[in-house]
Length: 102
Image (cartoon, rainbow, N blue to C red; front, side, top):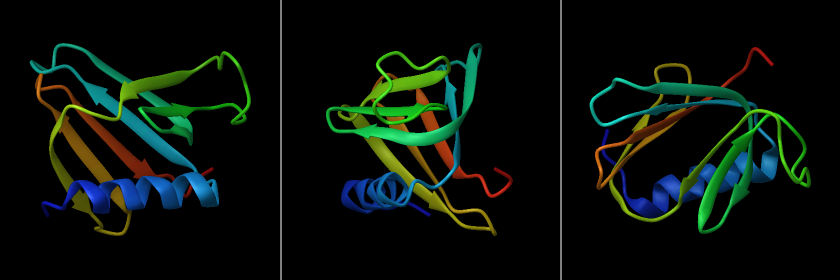
């Protein structure tokens, strides 16, 4: 289901504040490159940081760091696992899912 930018940000803020375990997947526009990390939304400002360490860790071991701007569309899905997916103007897609197995 397509959602507004504000709804996507609200869900990311909820995960950030509640320290909800998540899995983030980043896909290149042509799907030739796929990157994933399990952790937490540890940063949410001009950049979105999903990493497996604490919020104050200067350089996490495993992370995905993407701009919080230049997004073209936002989708929400909840077939039992809430998730948000954003597509950037470049065609890159970031999907973040609640991870209840952590």
